[in-house]
Image (cartoon, rainbow, N blue to C red; front, top):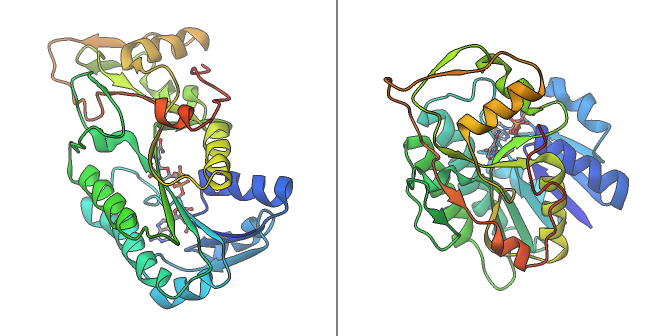
Length: 279
Ligand SMILES: NC(=O)c1ccc[n+]([C@@H]2O[C@H](COP(=O)([O-])OP(=O)(O)OC[C@H]3O[C@@H](n4cnc5c(N)ncnc54)[C@H](OP(=O)(O)O)[C@@H]3O)[C@@H](O)[C@H]2O)c1
């Protein structure tokens, strides 16, 4: 199996490592920076330096590949504006779709998206059939990216969209994510739902999607949505950190307040390694 991974950061690297070392697939990964080549050569058979909007480079990357994983995200500070978001996600998807016209060997595209496309559904349970309602322009870019990729599907090309919860795992533990909240005062009550997915499940589910040639949209979140308030309390207690104080008089932003079902991917046969959060 020859597989290209466009965007080889936290998720892409873990997938590359798994497939190269444990499955002996031939893995080609991309990076936008020459400085990362040596590091990535340890986990991939080939590393190419390209940006997602370079069609000729993507055409060359796709030659003789059986599948493509797209796992890009804006660099550095994640609170980037919509232009950077658009450049990273949408332009990469559009350029990939154009390049795929010249790559008949590719049978599947797997894209790591986000459950943030559901927006604030006021805690109502949602599934993949529910309408998207992005809460901001970045969320809209993610919706548009999904559409561009899904429209490229045809009888010879399967497109699988995985809508991931917040990512945690080795070197990105919840305590690292939330320790800066410890002992601070946060606005609101923290009574909004959050979803999480462990890195090991992301790797395992991407592998499952490949082996089972999944196509269409699948939520990839663990079994138990958690209120932000409960989650932070759990993490702070577990790691002996000072509690977060909630200021109920202040407004809070709840861009992803939804309860998202993972029933579809489980029905397809996927078994979660971490169905509940590990603090
Ligand atoms: N973080 C979360 O909690 C979360 C939640 C839901 C969904 N997701 C999604 O999960 C996916 C994986 O996230 P991650 O944490 O693995 O991201 P990450 O570690 O930031 O890696 C993203 C990779 O994208 C590459 N990239 C950035 N701009 C690019 C461009 N214009 N063209 C080509 N490559 C580009 C970067 O390459 P170089 O740095 O090597 O140049 C980087 O390695 C993303 O699609 C993200 O949106 C994340």
